[in-house]
Length: 256
Image (cartoon, rainbow, N blue to C red):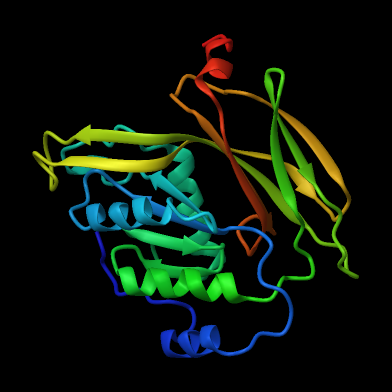
């Protein structure tokens, strides 16, 4: 539910002008990360969910759905919501000096805050971030599949100053559909993509080359993908991001 009209932290007009103008430097080296905080109990959310479905088809975007828990009290318990997703949204509100949280909310690359069902605003924010010159502290991040593990490689930073970033690991479900039986979306079939089912901090990065091995799957929740985000100071600008699908054959060998 939208209780306040939260707009981009920049002027959309200025952003549009910047996108069409000439930029110094190279474009961003990582896909733009779009995080949608959504709920099955929110009547304003299905339109935002559809926008994320659209964005997930783009190769230059990592689009994620993060169902939250605080609307469960309205008569329908969100079947995908987690406390970790709710905690992440609250942490963004604190980092961005917002007075509260709402749905549907989209955070773009950790720095832009957009009402999630406002398609033009969302697409403008994504285009703005895609056109930005590379942050000197950014790093190339790649994921690969090894025997029973996800292999994470982070290239060294070229920055003169030592960066500090959190390594976030999100285990995702590529597609989910729910027939809502009660609440504001009663009798609606809702579809979600790249649903964050598990969210954990995997350590910190201070600019050096790093390699991390992660287990293929974690916890009881259904999952078939992994997204890793390198994020400045916990909830700041995204400095690197990558996503990988985990074939069913790999998951079948994992004890559940």
